[in-house]
Amino acid sequence: MSLTRSDWEQRATTLVIEGGAFIDGALRPAVSGATFDCISPVDGRVLGQVASCDQADAEAAVQVARARFESGVWSRLAPVKRKQVMIRFADLIEAHREELALLETLDMGKPITDALKVDVTAAARAIRWSGEAIDKIYDEVAATPHDELGLVTREPIGVVAAIVPWNFPMIMSCWKLGPALAAGNSVILKPSEKSPLTGIRLAALALEAGIPAGVFNVLPGFGHTVGKALALHMDVDCLVFTGSTKVAKQLMIYAGESNMKRVWLEAGGKSPNIVFADAPDLAAAAEAAASAIAYNQGEVCTAGSRLLVERSIKDQFVPMVVEALKQWRPGHPLDPQTRVGAIVDQQQLGNVLGFIEAGRAEGAQLLVGGQRVMQDTGGTYVEPTLFDGVSNAMKIAREEIFGPVLSVIAFDTPEEAVQIANDTPYGLAAAVWTSNLSKAHLTAKALRAGSVWVNQYDGGDMTAPFGGFKQSGNGRDKSLHAFDKYTELKATWIKL
Ligand code: NAD
Image (cartoon, rainbow, N blue to C red):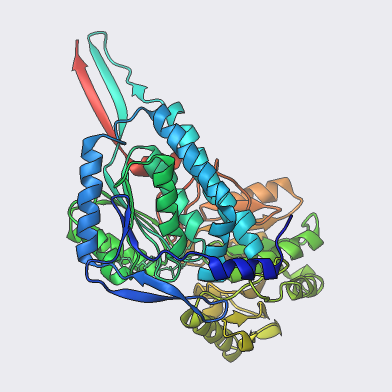
Protein backbone atom coordinates (compact mmCIF):
# COMPACT_ATOMS: atom_id res chain seq x y z
CA MET A 1 0.00 0.00 0.00
CA SER A 2 1.49 3.36 -0.93
CA LEU A 3 1.77 6.03 1.75
CA THR A 4 -0.06 9.36 1.60
CA ARG A 5 1.34 12.77 2.48
CA SER A 6 -0.23 12.58 5.92
CA ASP A 7 1.28 9.11 6.47
CA TRP A 8 4.72 10.55 5.68
CA GLU A 9 4.11 13.60 7.88
CA GLN A 10 3.07 11.31 10.70
CA ARG A 11 6.25 9.26 10.30
CA ALA A 12 8.33 12.41 10.24
CA THR A 13 7.15 13.21 13.78
CA THR A 14 8.71 10.01 15.16
CA LEU A 15 11.74 9.80 12.87
CA VAL A 16 15.00 9.40 14.78
CA ILE A 17 17.57 11.97 13.62
CA GLU A 18 21.11 10.79 14.34
CA GLY A 19 23.61 13.63 14.02
CA GLY A 20 26.78 12.10 15.46
CA ALA A 21 30.04 11.28 13.75
CA PHE A 22 30.37 7.53 13.19
CA ILE A 23 33.85 6.35 14.13
CA ASP A 24 35.02 2.83 14.98
CA GLY A 25 31.48 1.48 14.90
CA ALA A 26 29.90 4.03 17.24
CA LEU A 27 28.16 7.38 17.10
CA ARG A 28 30.05 10.13 18.87
CA PRO A 29 29.97 13.89 19.21
CA ALA A 30 32.70 15.95 17.57
CA VAL A 31 35.86 16.11 19.71
CA SER A 32 35.27 19.86 20.08
CA GLY A 33 31.63 19.28 21.02
CA ALA A 34 30.58 21.67 18.24
CA THR A 35 27.35 21.09 16.33
CA PHE A 36 25.43 22.79 13.54
CA ASP A 37 21.71 23.06 12.78
CA CYS A 38 20.41 20.62 10.19
CA ILE A 39 17.71 22.68 8.45
CA SER A 40 15.02 21.18 6.24
CA PRO A 41 14.40 23.08 2.98
CA VAL A 42 10.88 21.60 2.99
CA ASP A 43 9.71 24.16 5.60
CA GLY A 44 12.81 25.75 7.12
CA ARG A 45 12.48 23.64 10.29
CA VAL A 46 15.56 22.59 12.30
CA LEU A 47 15.62 18.80 12.07
CA GLY A 48 18.33 18.33 14.67
CA GLN A 49 21.91 19.00 15.65
CA VAL A 50 24.79 17.48 13.70
CA ALA A 51 28.39 17.05 14.85
CA SER A 52 30.63 19.69 13.31
CA CYS A 53 33.81 17.67 12.88
CA ASP A 54 37.24 19.17 12.40
CA GLN A 55 40.88 18.14 12.28
CA ALA A 56 40.76 16.28 15.61
CA ASP A 57 37.91 14.06 14.38
CA ALA A 58 39.69 13.51 11.06
CA GLU A 59 42.75 12.40 13.03
CA ALA A 60 40.73 9.91 15.07
CA ALA A 61 38.93 8.51 12.02
CA VAL A 62 42.08 8.14 9.93
CA GLN A 63 43.87 6.39 12.80
CA VAL A 64 41.13 3.82 13.26
CA ALA A 65 40.63 3.36 9.50
CA ARG A 66 44.38 2.74 9.08
CA ALA A 67 44.56 0.34 12.03
CA ARG A 68 41.61 -1.66 10.71
CA PHE A 69 43.09 -1.77 7.23
CA GLU A 70 46.45 -3.02 8.51
CA SER A 71 44.75 -5.62 10.71
CA GLY A 72 43.40 -7.34 7.59
CA VAL A 73 40.02 -7.96 9.23
CA TRP A 74 38.36 -6.64 6.06
CA SER A 75 41.19 -5.96 3.60
CA ARG A 76 42.41 -9.55 3.65
CA LEU A 77 39.02 -11.23 3.91
CA ALA A 78 38.31 -13.51 0.94
CA PRO A 79 36.45 -11.60 -1.80
CA VAL A 80 33.57 -14.06 -1.60
CA LYS A 81 33.15 -13.20 2.11
CA ARG A 82 33.23 -9.47 1.43
CA LYS A 83 30.66 -10.08 -1.27
CA GLN A 84 28.28 -11.73 1.20
CA VAL A 85 28.56 -8.80 3.62
CA MET A 86 28.05 -6.23 0.86
CA ILE A 87 24.90 -8.03 -0.26
CA ARG A 88 23.61 -8.01 3.32
CA PHE A 89 24.36 -4.27 3.44
CA ALA A 90 22.32 -3.74 0.23
CA ASP A 91 19.48 -5.85 1.68
CA LEU A 92 19.45 -3.68 4.82
CA ILE A 93 19.32 -0.48 2.76
CA GLU A 94 16.27 -1.88 1.01
CA ALA A 95 14.70 -3.05 4.27
CA HIS A 96 15.06 0.53 5.62
CA ARG A 97 13.93 2.17 2.39
CA GLU A 98 11.10 4.24 3.86
CA GLU A 99 13.22 5.57 6.71
CA LEU A 100 16.12 6.44 4.38
CA ALA A 101 13.83 8.06 1.80
CA LEU A 102 12.18 10.19 4.49
CA LEU A 103 15.55 11.30 5.88
CA GLU A 104 16.74 12.23 2.38
CA THR A 105 13.60 14.21 1.53
CA LEU A 106 13.50 16.12 4.81
CA ASP A 107 17.23 16.82 4.64
CA MET A 108 17.57 18.07 1.05
CA GLY A 109 14.05 18.63 -0.27
CA LYS A 110 13.63 16.13 -3.10
CA PRO A 111 10.17 14.57 -3.72
CA ILE A 112 9.54 11.53 -1.51
CA THR A 113 8.55 9.37 -4.48
CA ASP A 114 11.93 10.00 -6.12
CA ALA A 115 13.80 9.43 -2.85
CA LEU A 116 12.02 6.11 -2.43
CA LYS A 117 11.99 4.82 -6.00
CA VAL A 118 15.22 6.29 -7.37
CA ASP A 119 17.64 7.19 -4.59
CA VAL A 120 17.21 4.25 -2.22
CA THR A 121 16.96 1.79 -5.10
CA ALA A 122 20.07 3.08 -6.87
CA ALA A 123 22.06 3.26 -3.62
CA ALA A 124 21.27 -0.37 -2.77
CA ARG A 125 22.00 -1.42 -6.34
CA ALA A 126 25.45 0.23 -6.28
CA ILE A 127 26.38 -1.65 -3.09
CA ARG A 128 24.95 -4.96 -4.36
CA TRP A 129 26.48 -4.68 -7.84
CA SER A 130 29.95 -3.87 -6.48
CA GLY A 131 29.71 -6.69 -3.94
CA GLU A 132 28.60 -9.19 -6.55
CA ALA A 133 31.44 -8.14 -8.87
CA ILE A 134 34.32 -8.48 -6.42
CA ASP A 135 34.75 -12.27 -6.57
CA LYS A 136 34.60 -12.23 -10.37
CA ILE A 137 37.47 -9.85 -11.07
CA TYR A 138 40.64 -11.72 -12.02
CA ASP A 139 44.22 -10.53 -11.96
CA GLU A 140 46.66 -11.12 -14.84
CA VAL A 141 49.65 -13.30 -15.65
CA ALA A 142 52.08 -11.57 -17.99
CA ALA A 143 53.48 -13.12 -21.18
CA THR A 144 56.88 -14.02 -19.70
CA PRO A 145 59.83 -16.12 -20.87
CA HIS A 146 59.82 -19.78 -19.79
CA ASP A 147 61.94 -19.18 -16.66
CA GLU A 148 60.01 -16.23 -15.28
CA LEU A 149 56.53 -15.64 -13.91
CA GLY A 150 55.04 -12.16 -14.09
CA LEU A 151 52.00 -11.46 -11.92
CA VAL A 152 49.98 -8.28 -12.42
CA THR A 153 47.74 -7.89 -9.40
CA ARG A 154 45.49 -5.29 -7.85
CA GLU A 155 45.58 -4.52 -4.15
CA PRO A 156 43.29 -2.30 -2.06
CA ILE A 157 44.84 1.15 -1.79
CA GLY A 158 44.32 1.63 1.97
CA VAL A 159 42.45 4.53 3.57
CA VAL A 160 39.97 6.23 1.24
CA ALA A 161 38.34 9.60 2.02
CA ALA A 162 35.11 10.17 0.09
CA ILE A 163 33.74 13.73 -0.02
CA VAL A 164 30.24 13.94 -1.50
CA PRO A 165 27.62 16.59 -2.40
CA TRP A 166 24.01 17.11 -1.37
CA ASN A 167 22.01 16.55 -4.55
CA PHE A 168 21.96 12.73 -4.44
CA PRO A 169 23.56 12.15 -1.02
CA MET A 170 22.96 8.40 -0.80
CA ILE A 171 23.62 7.57 -4.45
CA MET A 172 26.84 9.58 -4.67
CA SER A 173 28.03 7.96 -1.42
CA CYS A 174 27.19 4.44 -2.57
CA TRP A 175 28.81 4.85 -6.00
CA LYS A 176 32.02 5.33 -4.00
CA LEU A 177 31.37 3.06 -1.00
CA GLY A 178 30.46 0.12 -3.26
CA PRO A 179 33.76 -0.41 -5.07
CA ALA A 180 35.91 1.07 -2.26
CA LEU A 181 34.58 -1.31 0.40
CA ALA A 182 34.22 -4.31 -1.91
CA ALA A 183 37.90 -3.94 -2.87
CA GLY A 184 38.88 -4.16 0.83
CA ASN A 185 39.64 -0.54 1.72
CA SER A 186 38.78 1.41 4.84
CA VAL A 187 36.60 4.44 4.08
CA ILE A 188 35.88 7.80 5.71
CA LEU A 189 32.77 9.41 4.24
CA LYS A 190 32.39 13.20 4.47
CA PRO A 191 28.79 14.03 3.54
CA SER A 192 27.77 17.57 2.61
CA GLU A 193 26.88 19.84 5.52
CA LYS A 194 23.60 20.39 3.63
CA SER A 195 22.61 16.69 3.70
CA PRO A 196 24.49 14.72 6.37
CA LEU A 197 21.73 12.44 7.66
CA THR A 198 21.57 9.43 5.34
CA GLY A 199 25.37 8.99 5.31
CA ILE A 200 25.38 8.61 9.10
CA ARG A 201 22.52 6.08 8.89
CA LEU A 202 24.27 4.09 6.14
CA ALA A 203 27.28 3.56 8.40
CA ALA A 204 25.09 2.00 11.11
CA LEU A 205 23.48 -0.31 8.55
CA ALA A 206 26.90 -1.32 7.19
CA LEU A 207 28.00 -2.27 10.71
CA GLU A 208 24.82 -4.28 11.21
CA ALA A 209 25.52 -6.06 7.91
CA GLY A 210 28.93 -7.19 9.17
CA ILE A 211 31.38 -4.59 7.90
CA PRO A 212 33.85 -4.47 10.81
CA ALA A 213 33.86 -1.42 13.08
CA GLY A 214 36.29 1.22 11.87
CA VAL A 215 36.20 0.12 8.23
CA PHE A 216 33.44 2.59 7.31
CA ASN A 217 33.44 5.89 9.24
CA VAL A 218 31.45 9.08 8.70
CA LEU A 219 32.54 12.62 9.53
CA PRO A 220 29.80 15.22 9.09
CA GLY A 221 30.93 18.82 9.04
CA PHE A 222 31.94 21.69 6.83
CA GLY A 223 34.13 21.02 3.81
CA HIS A 224 36.68 23.70 4.49
CA THR A 225 37.39 22.28 7.96
CA VAL A 226 36.96 18.50 8.12
CA GLY A 227 37.01 18.00 4.31
CA LYS A 228 40.20 19.99 4.07
CA ALA A 229 41.74 18.08 7.00
CA LEU A 230 41.09 14.79 5.19
CA ALA A 231 42.37 16.14 1.87
CA LEU A 232 45.61 17.32 3.49
CA HIS A 233 46.07 14.26 5.70
CA MET A 234 49.37 12.44 5.22
CA ASP A 235 47.84 9.03 5.95
CA VAL A 236 44.87 9.15 3.55
CA ASP A 237 45.87 7.19 0.45
CA CYS A 238 43.04 8.11 -1.88
CA LEU A 239 40.60 11.01 -2.07
CA VAL A 240 37.43 10.57 -4.11
CA PHE A 241 35.14 13.52 -4.60
CA THR A 242 31.87 14.54 -6.18
CA GLY A 243 31.04 18.22 -6.12
CA SER A 244 31.85 21.50 -7.78
CA THR A 245 34.76 22.09 -10.16
CA LYS A 246 36.01 24.91 -7.89
CA VAL A 247 36.43 22.60 -4.89
CA ALA A 248 37.72 19.77 -7.12
CA LYS A 249 40.63 21.97 -8.25
CA GLN A 250 41.40 22.88 -4.65
CA LEU A 251 41.56 19.19 -3.70
CA MET A 252 44.23 18.58 -6.34
CA ILE A 253 46.28 21.33 -4.70
CA TYR A 254 45.79 19.78 -1.24
CA ALA A 255 46.98 16.41 -2.55
CA GLY A 256 50.08 18.05 -4.07
CA GLU A 257 50.77 19.91 -0.83
CA SER A 258 50.54 16.74 1.25
CA ASN A 259 51.28 13.13 0.32
CA MET A 260 50.29 13.03 -3.38
CA LYS A 261 47.28 10.92 -2.48
CA ARG A 262 45.37 9.65 -5.51
CA VAL A 263 42.62 12.16 -6.33
CA TRP A 264 39.54 11.22 -8.35
CA LEU A 265 37.05 13.93 -9.15
CA GLU A 266 33.47 14.04 -10.39
CA ALA A 267 32.66 17.69 -10.87
CA GLY A 268 30.25 20.09 -12.55
CA GLY A 269 28.51 20.11 -15.92
CA LYS A 270 26.67 22.24 -18.47
CA SER A 271 25.33 19.49 -20.65
CA PRO A 272 23.99 20.07 -24.17
CA ASN A 273 20.82 18.31 -25.30
CA ILE A 274 20.83 18.49 -29.13
CA VAL A 275 17.54 18.11 -30.98
CA PHE A 276 17.87 17.75 -34.75
CA ALA A 277 14.91 18.39 -37.07
CA ASP A 278 14.83 14.67 -37.91
CA ALA A 279 14.37 13.55 -34.27
CA PRO A 280 12.26 10.37 -34.34
CA ASP A 281 9.66 11.63 -31.86
CA LEU A 282 9.52 15.34 -31.04
CA ALA A 283 6.92 14.81 -28.32
CA ALA A 284 9.24 12.38 -26.54
CA ALA A 285 12.16 14.78 -27.02
CA ALA A 286 10.13 17.64 -25.50
CA GLU A 287 9.14 15.54 -22.47
CA ALA A 288 12.76 14.48 -21.99
CA ALA A 289 14.04 18.05 -22.34
CA ALA A 290 11.67 19.17 -19.56
CA SER A 291 12.56 16.27 -17.31
CA ALA A 292 16.30 16.81 -17.97
CA ILE A 293 16.10 20.26 -16.34
CA ALA A 294 13.27 19.89 -13.80
CA TYR A 295 14.01 16.49 -12.26
CA ASN A 296 15.53 16.81 -8.77
CA GLN A 297 14.84 20.59 -9.02
CA GLY A 298 17.55 20.78 -11.68
CA GLU A 299 20.11 19.96 -8.99
CA VAL A 300 21.70 17.34 -11.20
CA CYS A 301 25.30 17.37 -12.45
CA THR A 302 24.13 16.01 -15.82
CA ALA A 303 21.11 18.35 -16.08
CA GLY A 304 20.35 19.07 -19.74
CA SER A 305 20.70 22.79 -19.13
CA ARG A 306 21.50 23.82 -22.72
CA LEU A 307 18.78 22.76 -25.17
CA LEU A 308 20.24 23.08 -28.69
CA VAL A 309 17.42 23.08 -31.24
CA GLU A 310 17.73 23.02 -35.04
CA ARG A 311 16.31 26.34 -36.21
CA SER A 312 13.89 24.81 -38.75
CA ILE A 313 11.83 23.15 -35.96
CA LYS A 314 12.38 25.67 -33.19
CA ASP A 315 9.00 27.43 -33.50
CA GLN A 316 7.24 24.07 -33.36
CA PHE A 317 9.41 22.43 -30.72
CA VAL A 318 9.94 25.11 -28.05
CA PRO A 319 6.19 25.49 -27.27
CA MET A 320 6.08 21.71 -26.77
CA VAL A 321 8.88 21.97 -24.19
CA VAL A 322 7.11 24.89 -22.49
CA GLU A 323 3.94 22.79 -22.18
CA ALA A 324 5.91 19.82 -20.85
CA LEU A 325 7.67 22.04 -18.31
CA LYS A 326 4.35 23.37 -16.99
CA GLN A 327 3.63 19.84 -15.77
CA TRP A 328 6.64 20.13 -13.45
CA ARG A 329 5.10 22.31 -10.71
CA PRO A 330 6.80 22.57 -7.33
CA GLY A 331 4.82 20.87 -4.59
CA HIS A 332 5.19 19.64 -1.02
CA PRO A 333 8.02 17.08 -1.07
CA LEU A 334 6.10 14.65 1.16
CA ASP A 335 3.15 14.54 -1.24
CA PRO A 336 3.68 11.38 -3.34
CA GLN A 337 2.35 13.21 -6.45
CA THR A 338 4.99 15.97 -6.26
CA ARG A 339 7.53 16.02 -9.09
CA VAL A 340 9.54 19.13 -8.07
CA GLY A 341 10.55 19.61 -4.45
CA ALA A 342 12.47 22.30 -2.56
CA ILE A 343 15.83 23.82 -3.51
CA VAL A 344 18.38 22.59 -0.97
CA ASP A 345 18.76 25.83 1.02
CA GLN A 346 18.41 29.62 1.03
CA GLN A 347 21.88 30.12 -0.40
CA GLN A 348 21.23 27.86 -3.40
CA LEU A 349 17.80 29.44 -3.91
CA GLY A 350 19.54 32.83 -4.04
CA ASN A 351 21.99 31.47 -6.64
CA VAL A 352 19.18 30.17 -8.84
CA LEU A 353 17.15 33.40 -8.61
CA GLY A 354 20.34 35.34 -9.38
CA PHE A 355 20.82 33.35 -12.61
CA ILE A 356 17.18 33.97 -13.59
CA GLU A 357 17.79 37.68 -13.08
CA ALA A 358 20.99 37.48 -15.16
CA GLY A 359 19.09 35.77 -18.00
CA ARG A 360 16.54 38.58 -18.04
CA ALA A 361 19.25 41.24 -17.85
CA GLU A 362 21.17 39.74 -20.78
CA GLY A 363 18.06 39.85 -22.97
CA ALA A 364 17.00 36.19 -23.07
CA GLN A 365 13.21 35.68 -23.34
CA LEU A 366 11.57 34.13 -20.33
CA LEU A 367 8.82 31.82 -21.64
CA VAL A 368 7.81 29.98 -18.47
CA GLY A 369 8.60 30.01 -14.74
CA GLY A 370 11.03 32.45 -13.20
CA GLN A 371 9.40 32.88 -9.78
CA ARG A 372 9.99 31.79 -6.24
CA VAL A 373 6.79 30.05 -5.04
CA MET A 374 5.23 28.49 -1.91
CA GLN A 375 6.90 31.01 0.37
CA ASP A 376 4.15 30.50 2.98
CA THR A 377 5.57 27.03 3.67
CA GLY A 378 8.84 28.47 4.97
CA GLY A 379 10.61 26.31 2.36
CA THR A 380 12.68 27.18 -0.71
CA TYR A 381 10.77 26.53 -3.95
CA VAL A 382 11.27 27.87 -7.45
CA GLU A 383 9.37 27.30 -10.69
CA PRO A 384 11.09 25.40 -13.51
CA THR A 385 12.12 28.12 -15.91
CA LEU A 386 12.82 28.31 -19.65
CA PHE A 387 14.69 31.05 -21.49
CA ASP A 388 14.53 31.21 -25.28
CA GLY A 389 16.81 33.24 -27.52
CA VAL A 390 19.91 32.40 -25.51
CA SER A 391 23.38 32.74 -26.99
CA ASN A 392 26.10 30.40 -25.78
CA ALA A 393 28.07 33.42 -24.59
CA MET A 394 25.47 34.42 -21.98
CA LYS A 395 26.13 33.73 -18.30
CA ILE A 396 23.12 31.37 -18.07
CA ALA A 397 24.61 29.25 -20.88
CA ARG A 398 28.17 29.24 -19.57
CA GLU A 399 27.89 28.68 -15.83
CA GLU A 400 26.46 25.73 -13.97
CA ILE A 401 23.22 26.91 -12.33
CA PHE A 402 22.36 23.69 -10.49
CA GLY A 403 18.69 24.62 -10.53
CA PRO A 404 15.73 24.24 -12.90
CA VAL A 405 16.70 26.89 -15.47
CA LEU A 406 16.82 25.87 -19.14
CA SER A 407 18.50 27.82 -21.96
CA VAL A 408 17.32 27.29 -25.55
CA ILE A 409 19.97 27.92 -28.20
CA ALA A 410 19.29 27.65 -31.95
CA PHE A 411 21.66 26.11 -34.52
CA ASP A 412 21.58 25.55 -38.28
CA THR A 413 23.98 22.69 -39.09
CA PRO A 414 25.33 19.58 -37.32
CA GLU A 415 28.79 21.18 -37.29
CA GLU A 416 27.45 24.26 -35.55
CA ALA A 417 25.57 22.10 -33.02
CA VAL A 418 28.77 20.27 -32.10
CA GLN A 419 30.77 23.50 -31.96
CA ILE A 420 28.27 25.08 -29.51
CA ALA A 421 27.92 21.85 -27.52
CA ASN A 422 31.68 21.61 -26.99
CA ASP A 423 32.12 25.32 -26.29
CA THR A 424 32.13 24.89 -22.51
CA PRO A 425 34.78 24.12 -19.87
CA TYR A 426 32.72 21.08 -18.86
CA GLY A 427 32.36 17.65 -20.47
CA LEU A 428 30.09 15.50 -18.33
CA ALA A 429 27.19 14.46 -20.56
CA ALA A 430 25.33 15.22 -23.79
CA ALA A 431 22.32 13.95 -25.74
CA VAL A 432 21.50 13.77 -29.44
CA TRP A 433 18.06 13.30 -31.01
CA THR A 434 18.02 12.16 -34.65
CA SER A 435 16.64 9.33 -36.84
CA ASN A 436 19.80 9.33 -38.94
CA LEU A 437 22.14 6.59 -37.73
CA SER A 438 25.27 8.12 -39.20
CA LYS A 439 24.48 11.56 -37.82
CA ALA A 440 23.85 10.03 -34.39
CA HIS A 441 27.21 8.23 -34.36
CA LEU A 442 29.22 11.07 -35.88
CA THR A 443 27.76 13.60 -33.44
CA ALA A 444 28.26 11.27 -30.47
CA LYS A 445 31.92 10.81 -31.46
CA ALA A 446 32.46 14.55 -31.86
CA LEU A 447 31.01 15.43 -28.44
CA ARG A 448 33.64 15.89 -25.71
CA ALA A 449 31.63 14.31 -22.89
CA GLY A 450 31.90 11.26 -20.64
CA SER A 451 28.33 10.10 -21.38
CA VAL A 452 26.39 10.56 -24.61
CA TRP A 453 22.74 9.54 -24.91
CA VAL A 454 20.98 9.04 -28.22
CA ASN A 455 17.21 9.54 -28.52
CA GLN A 456 16.86 9.63 -24.74
CA TYR A 457 18.20 11.62 -21.82
CA ASP A 458 20.08 10.05 -18.90
CA GLY A 459 20.36 6.40 -19.95
CA GLY A 460 22.67 3.81 -18.38
CA ASP A 461 22.95 1.67 -15.27
CA MET A 462 25.64 0.26 -12.98
CA THR A 463 27.37 -1.38 -15.97
CA ALA A 464 28.16 2.00 -17.58
CA PRO A 465 31.12 4.11 -16.41
CA PHE A 466 30.12 7.62 -15.31
CA GLY A 467 32.38 10.65 -15.24
CA GLY A 468 33.65 13.63 -17.12
CA PHE A 469 35.97 14.98 -19.78
CA LYS A 470 37.68 18.36 -19.32
CA GLN A 471 36.79 20.24 -16.11
CA SER A 472 34.01 17.79 -15.26
CA GLY A 473 36.60 15.56 -13.65
CA ASN A 474 38.72 12.45 -14.01
CA GLY A 475 38.25 8.76 -13.30
CA ARG A 476 34.89 7.03 -13.42
CA ASP A 477 32.22 5.95 -10.96
CA LYS A 478 30.17 2.78 -11.63
CA SER A 479 31.08 -0.24 -13.77
CA LEU A 480 34.21 -2.38 -13.31
CA HIS A 481 36.31 0.68 -14.26
CA ALA A 482 35.45 2.20 -10.86
CA PHE A 483 37.61 -0.43 -9.13
CA ASP A 484 40.72 1.12 -10.73
CA LYS A 485 40.37 4.10 -8.38
CA TYR A 486 40.38 2.00 -5.23
CA THR A 487 43.26 -0.34 -6.05
CA GLU A 488 46.98 -0.10 -6.75
CA LEU A 489 48.47 -2.12 -9.59
CA LYS A 490 51.44 -4.31 -8.67
CA ALA A 491 53.85 -6.19 -10.94
CA THR A 492 55.53 -9.15 -9.21
CA TRP A 493 58.29 -10.68 -11.33
CA ILE A 494 59.55 -14.09 -10.26
CA LYS A 495 62.74 -15.75 -11.54
CA LEU A 496 62.00 -19.45 -11.68
P1 NAD B 1 30.70 21.55 -3.35
O1 NAD B 1 31.91 21.40 -4.18
O2 NAD B 1 30.40 22.87 -2.76
O3 NAD B 1 30.78 20.56 -2.12
C1 NAD B 1 30.97 19.17 -2.31
C2 NAD B 1 31.56 18.58 -1.05
O4 NAD B 1 32.85 19.13 -0.86
C3 NAD B 1 30.77 18.87 0.22
O5 NAD B 1 30.79 17.72 1.05
C4 NAD B 1 31.55 20.00 0.85
O6 NAD B 1 31.44 20.07 2.24
C5 NAD B 1 32.96 19.64 0.45
N1 NAD B 1 33.91 20.77 0.43
C6 NAD B 1 33.64 22.08 0.18
N2 NAD B 1 34.78 22.79 0.26
C7 NAD B 1 35.77 21.95 0.57
C8 NAD B 1 37.18 22.09 0.81
N3 NAD B 1 37.78 23.28 0.73
N4 NAD B 1 37.89 20.99 1.09
C9 NAD B 1 37.31 19.78 1.16
N5 NAD B 1 35.98 19.58 0.97
C10 NAD B 1 35.24 20.65 0.67
O7 NAD B 1 29.49 21.00 -4.22
P2 NAD B 1 27.96 20.88 -3.81
O8 NAD B 1 27.38 22.25 -3.82
O9 NAD B 1 27.82 20.04 -2.60
O10 NAD B 1 27.37 20.03 -5.03
C11 NAD B 1 27.07 20.59 -6.25
C12 NAD B 1 28.16 20.30 -7.25
O11 NAD B 1 28.36 18.89 -7.34
C13 NAD B 1 27.79 20.74 -8.65
O12 NAD B 1 28.87 21.40 -9.23
C14 NAD B 1 27.50 19.43 -9.37
O13 NAD B 1 27.70 19.46 -10.75
C15 NAD B 1 28.45 18.51 -8.71
N6 NAD B 1 28.04 17.11 -8.90
C16 NAD B 1 28.77 16.35 -9.77
C17 NAD B 1 28.42 15.04 -10.00
C18 NAD B 1 29.23 14.17 -10.93
O14 NAD B 1 29.11 12.96 -10.83
N7 NAD B 1 30.04 14.72 -11.80
C19 NAD B 1 27.32 14.49 -9.34
C20 NAD B 1 26.60 15.29 -8.46
C21 NAD B 1 26.98 16.60 -8.24
